[in-house]
Image (cartoon, rainbow over all chains, first blue to last red; front, side, top):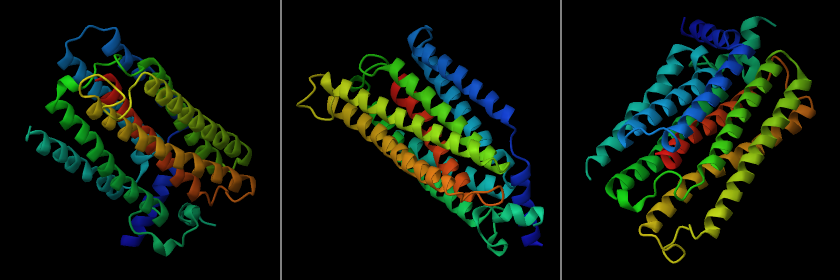
Length: 102
Length: 210
């Protein structure tokens, strides 16, 4: 049973990938988001805290697009997705825990 | 060959090796990339902590670092991600010619990224921005310089390794090693390459824009 599920998962990953059109849409989105990112600290006069929040949000959005579509995470079996997500909270804790020391 | 077998053979692996729903070589790459997440988190986390503790020792965006030049480099890396994923899509269809073309394109763009980074380093060091107090007069330069060169240097090293792997793929592609049923090496190298792009997206924001 386990093995059959694994096979089905692998096949889903193989056949359910993004289309070429989707790759270009993601590319366009990444390019536009990069331009906005550059404009935020150089041209747009937001307060520093707002800038930081916006820039981090845009960076995470871009990273997510790359992971989901170019790395095909969106089309991978659920258990692999969980494996990838698992260390991310640990990474955040690593930074926040030490940051509070200062 | 059944569809199942075709999917599982992509990495040249036997079907009995499947455990997580993907072939072992791909699972191995994901595990490696997750260890890389922790590696880069420690570098980026250290930078954030040092900067939060000593805000006066770090320059504001554009004061020292060349943002437009690096934005161009970011764009190059995004382009290379598209060409890489198109190479993968091509070999999934069994299109050998496009696989070779997109792989060569990706490797060349990767080399361009490294070229721009070397140019940036030469430019910055020419202005005295080096990771030592002797070479740069501004207060806090050692902290700013060492964190900058450590993070971007390690990332650049990852790009360099990726470029080597891409040229290896190109050679293998010209030898006809990859087919629609067996192209695991293209996929896992692609995973590595996209990860390098993903890390740069974060680095660009944290180091150059904030």
